[in-house]
Length: 105
Image 1 (cartoon, one colour):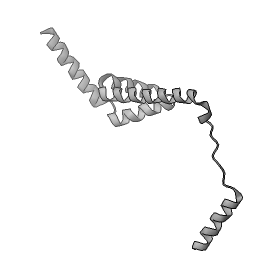
Image 2 (image 1 turned 180 degrees about the horizontal axis):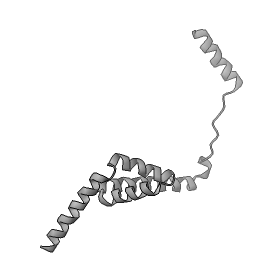
Image 3 (image 1 turned 90 degrees about the vertical axis):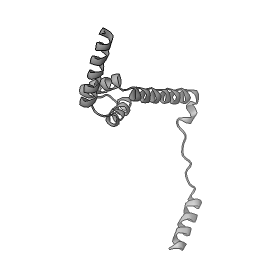
Image 4 (image 1 turned 135 degrees about the vertical axis):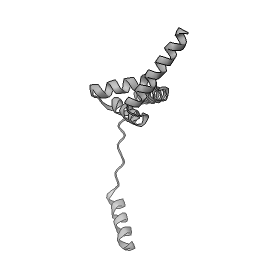
C-alpha cells in the first residue's frame, strides 16, 4: 500500500514538473548551449530538473557527450589534421576563371 501511494505521489510530482518546466525542444537547446558555455543559474536548474524526469533528453545528452569525446580523442590522435591550410588558387587559375565568367555574360 505504501509503495503504491509513493509511486502515485512521485508520478504526480513528475507531471507537475513537466508542465512547469520548459519542453524538450528548449531543453535540447540548453543542452547544446551548456556544451558551448556556461548557463545561467536558472537555466542550469531548469535543465537539471528536466533531465531528472525526461529519459529521452538524458539519452540525447549522453549521445552528444559520446560524440564530443570521440571527436576529442580523434583530434589528439591526429593533431596535424587540426590545422590544415586551404590550398590557394594560383594567379593563372584565377585569370582562367575570370575569362570564363566574362565570356558567359
